[in-house]
Length: 137
Image (cartoon, rainbow, N blue to C red):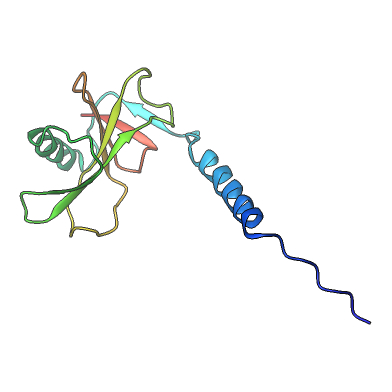
């Protein structure tokens, strides 16, 4: 005679397991890679694009609310709002905001190119690889 089927965990238990697994992954993602770096200037390719985007975001007053903003080329650009410096690469005890460099159709997927700005001091960094490296603009 076959064994009776095992009862399945309730949906709250299954949800808790999934959320726990996600929290573990997010925690790991917040650790800076061993080869992460902060550079005092930006001389790599795309720095000119980052500087141009920085000027446009500055003309918009560096918005702090995440969302899509109209861009001069008729498309849109996105700001993700507050950047929490989880990588620990930028100076501590500051509040940062993140802005995309390249415009796109509203709602399109974001790429890895970001500008991170300390609105209090105006200091800005370009990250061409989604917060692995930071180049001072």
